[in-house]
Image (cartoon, rainbow, N blue to C red; front, top):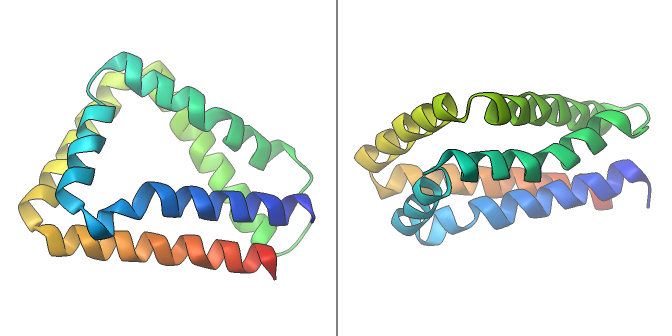
Length: 131
């Protein structure tokens, strides 16, 4: 398998694993996400977990094509997010709190719908990586 395929499948699995619980247990998932960003230390740890994947997506020679371009965009977005999380974790926590409050007020149906969309994206990335 080529690097672009491996990374596509890896990211697809990562998206499904992290957003799939939103479909089956939306309230519990929001509670876990709120706890995940409860301190600056946890936010910085999250940044350190995302940074290697972002670096791989940006630095590896993924070739040309639509899938490679999409993965490279993901890499730049995650790299920017990792820097943001490392430098100013407090501002990130504020944004996440507002987003989580919105989803809690909007109800479980909205959270489930977002989970279904995310899982669909993950399945599409796996499909294009295996194809």
